[in-house]
Image 1 (cartoon, one colour):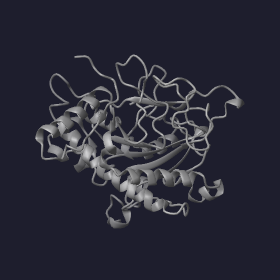
Image 2 (spheres, helix red, strand yellow):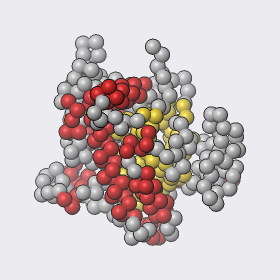
Image 3 (tube, helix red, strand yellow):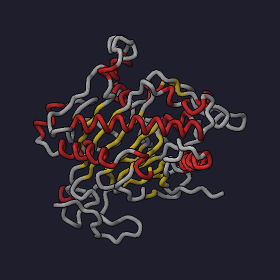
Image 4 (cartoon, helix red, strand yellow):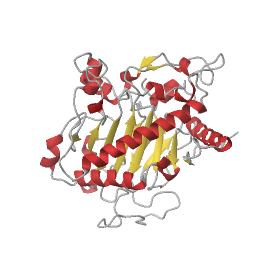
Length: 374
């Protein structure tokens, strides 16, 4: 049977319903997407209310429109603001983006004397919990909008992980992955790509370089849709545009799911291209479809700029990523183990900060021959 490399749209609402046939259909659709392309869109945002997504994006937009000196009051490489040219980044050219991020929003309710959360207990705990989230004072409602969105992403991810476990017939049942994510170390990140100035040198082709994510699951929301986002599944002949769907959420698998499933599922290379508006399949070049108010037509596909909200989910930093634990669907005599077991925290975004200090390459990026540095 021919492999379909299209990024599908999947309605997961029936997974927890009373109809076992409909629930099984959800599992089958997700399994196929994860095996073939590693990306899928969620119909109706996977049940996340539209106003919640809209409020989080609006709060992010409001923050980025503040004066730089005000944004710098919450500057941090881990949990807070990073300006344009504010850090080294192998995936996103530092001159082409600014960002704001936060981690867990429930830390006031956990036992901070637990060595897992105690920064003085271990280098790992210090890496993930040695800093608190930095919340800006403006715009009004920013923290509330972000905290509500973060909690919604936690809930949606738990649901997706249950679907994944059933699709893989995991040894531990539906909670196989969720049991290893109860103390997760996930980041919520807003990324703004300012307008491209093509008058100052060579044309810029890539907003974001080809890479894979170090997560188990990544969930993206877009202010205007995934403009310029392309994927290159293993075996595909060329890069594929992600369908233009501004009102939904996009899910992609990260490297941890690839290792956990022994390459049965995809952690797919993706990038963001800068190109003339309308240069998508079936859209005449120069047609300014969906241009926001105040943005001139004929500009780049970012319409003057581009904003996305990304939930980078990562399991407990001490969770063991071992494909043999999943079971016979991914490891067997016909499909022997391809990767050694490792702790989740060894491959997270924060772990790469330590690798940067040691001069080690970013594992997200690809070598010149498109192979990945594992």
